[in-house]
Length: 171
Image 1: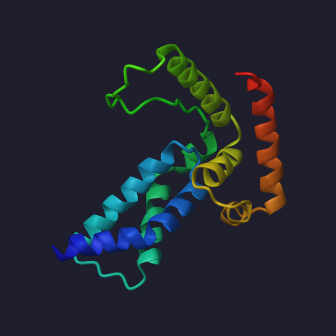
Image 2: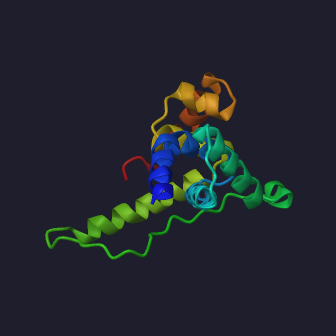
């Protein structure tokens, strides 16, 4: 039971820095969740085998680095294309009787279209979107993780958002 409580402790202490690290290094945003889960799966296995890290964050980020390098071979890095499909998890959804199904369907269609547009952007801009809008990091934090200037992040996001607004204005 000790390994389980240590895992929970390490997870709570490291989840945000590790998610930020993985998000800044992934070639495709759809890989983030998978690599995050794989990282913590390996952390659990290491703890079960008796690992006792003194520096939990460094330990978990080391495992994340391994997961990233294993996930992306050199060939995949060269051929990386952003072709993400925004699909649902397949989980059943309870929709109240008062819901306007046509409006809900239109919202889903619009969401899928916007998601496709975002995922067609260069991978660095996708990561900027993910870090800034999904993880709610500041522009400064996003720039730091990406290894670029804050003005570059601001400029790239502004251009992308402006393009999306023009395309989907009124929808």
